[in-house]
Image (cartoon, rainbow, N blue to C red; front, side, top):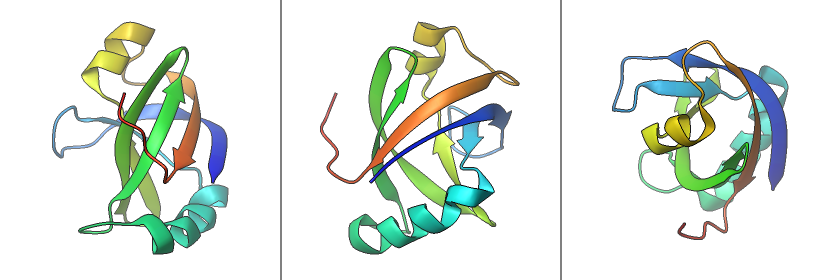
Amino acid sequence: MKLAFEAPIIEWRGPPPYLFVAVPEHLVGEVAYAAREVSYGWGMVPATVRIGRTDFTTALFRRGDTYMLPIKVAVQRAEGVGFGDRIAVIVEIGNVSRR
């Protein structure tokens, strides 16, 4: 499953890197549906993500009524993005290839 959306980078006190993008409300159901097939330990949902020209692997996790997408420090630096920036995101759930 592939999703594309725009959302602001937010801060949440959790595991580093502390900056995340929340999956928009209208896509949460699609992520939850896909998670039933690909989720592993603690509800983590493996994904390959593209922000700008940077592709990376990560895992989305449930937080309240949404899923959080961690934005790795290396991606923040490569794309020159940070807290408060609105970014375009492409998320491919499952079929994670290591990059």
